[in-house]
Image 1 (cartoon, helix red, strand yellow):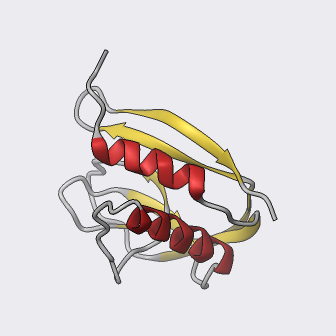
Image 2: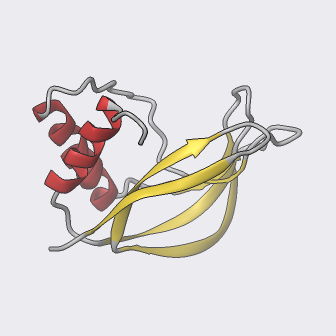
Length: 127
């Protein structure tokens, strides 16, 4: 078996300790990040209180576990659609897509030619 990764173990414990209510939000903008993999994404132009509450709870649980947490003021909540696009995509309004969030997951991503996503664990959201 693979040796335990302390950061993954801390993230799993943080997920176990996190309590947040289900929430809804609207994806209404498409864009891309200007980094080496040029990911295209969908996001919300408005503040999503439920998403921010979930993030705060997860960050607090990681800090409580003495795990290093990088506060990222420029964090953009998004759903990645494509990696390694051949060009950047200017932020563009799209027809709204309603999204109901009822659970969250820890996902390990592997990039490169054999890119893949592995769900390590999921947790339900409950009021």
